[in-house]
Image (cartoon, rainbow, N blue to C red; front, side):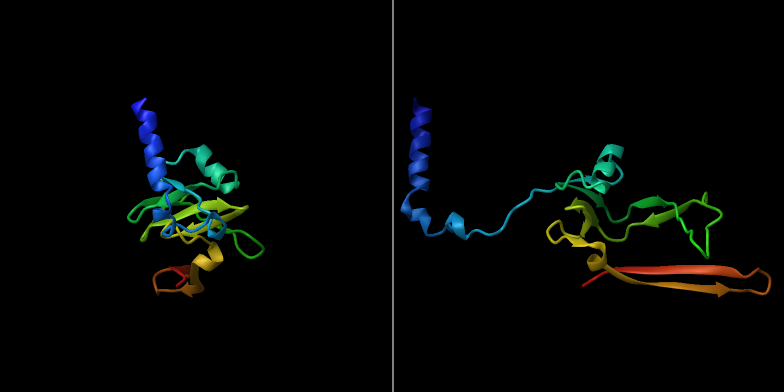
Length: 151
């Protein structure tokens, strides 16, 4: 019995007009809060990654922590070029924490778990292509990208 009376007493105190001035009426609250859980990219299961990439879950994000190096498999193909040595081991170092999740069929990116943007609005950058030649070496094709967070 004491527990019930305590709960009733608390609800009477917190439901009293004394606290009503501090809270907004329900019809004035416009924000919807979605709780986002996240998993470190190094610990993510195949199923979690697929569910995010396919847009099946919206409340799970993949965390890419600063300092992590991930194997990178570049793929270039098309009318003009095709990457012929696709077995080369390259590493992509994460220089700043960021998160990726799916929302309404699109991949969304964030650096703070609050502001989510599509890739085009999250990053900006440049892509450079050119040729390099040293006297002793053959002509080498150069493909360079710089990707930064959009302010």
